[in-house]
Structure formats: C-alpha cells, structure tokens
Length: 130
Image (tube, rainbow, N blue to C red; front, side, top):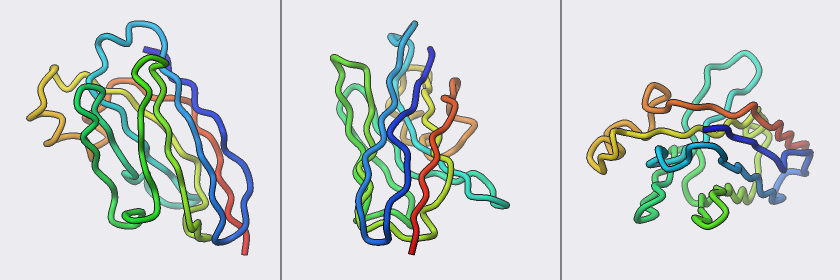
C-alpha cells in the first residue's frame, strides 16, 4: 500500500484546513486508516482513525470536537477536516494504513497505536500562525 498525503499549508488561528490521504496499490489489505502528527521536538501522537468497513472513528483527546475524519471508499481516500485550529496543532501530519488482521476487535484495540499500522505516508506540514 502506498499513501500520498496532501493539503497541508499555513492557516491562521481559528481557521480550518482539510488534508487528504490517497491510498494505492494493494489497498484490499487495508482495514483501517489513521492520522498521526509530530510537532518539532515532540513525539509522534495519535490524531484520528477510521475503518474502511463501517466507518467507525476514534480521536485523540487534543482534537476531539474540532477535527473530523472521513473516508471515500470508492476513491480509497481519507480526509481530516481540521477546524478551530490552534498554534499547538502545528505539526507534520502523517497518514497510515493497517490491516489489523481484518479484525474489528484488533482495529479497536490498536488504532491509536503506531505499531498497529503497516504503511506510512510521507507527511504533510500544517502550520497554524497566531
């Protein structure tokens, strides 16, 4: 599976931005997708995840109520709509794909963990300016 993230850029505090991640290759092996981010000098953290099958979602505490993850199964593309952006949202955002053993249980158990994912995109930079 190859992942191509796009849509990053600069935005003012309180603004919105949508980033995308297009999956290609052997996408049938992908059960769920996730977004993680890494700010300068910090560890990579979980942002959001979604399953291809039933669209179940999960969010990191710092983005709940502001970010929305969605997917387009036909296009094999996942989106992250980011609203009410804050300076602390500045980071490189990475999308990831995982097979989770084709298990809904495994997806729910591992979707917030980096080790749950098999493939990673190159990242897209989001900068929020005050």
